[in-house]
Image 1 (cartoon, rainbow, N blue to C red):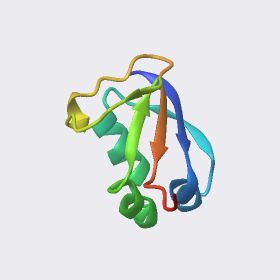
Image 2 (image 1 turned 90 degrees about the vertical axis):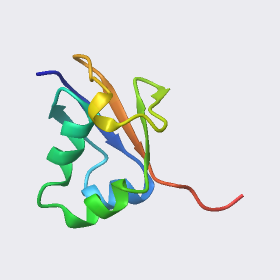
Image 3 (image 1 turned 135 degrees about the horizontal axis):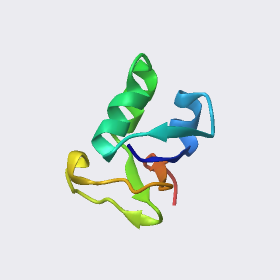
Length: 83
């Protein structure tokens, strides 16, 4: 089981109620399941988010295929409005 840090930005930060927290998960899919359990508002927000793992965009890869290394930092980025 990998451990690391997840950072929330903008609406994700508001929905999570924290700017960052530690996690234990093997894949991004497992992490999403864990962080949204009993957090309906966060679950709704992360559906629209993009993700960076150690600074690299996840893109359209299935989250269950994105393996998290020990010490990985996951950034949760909601869509930004404005120009």
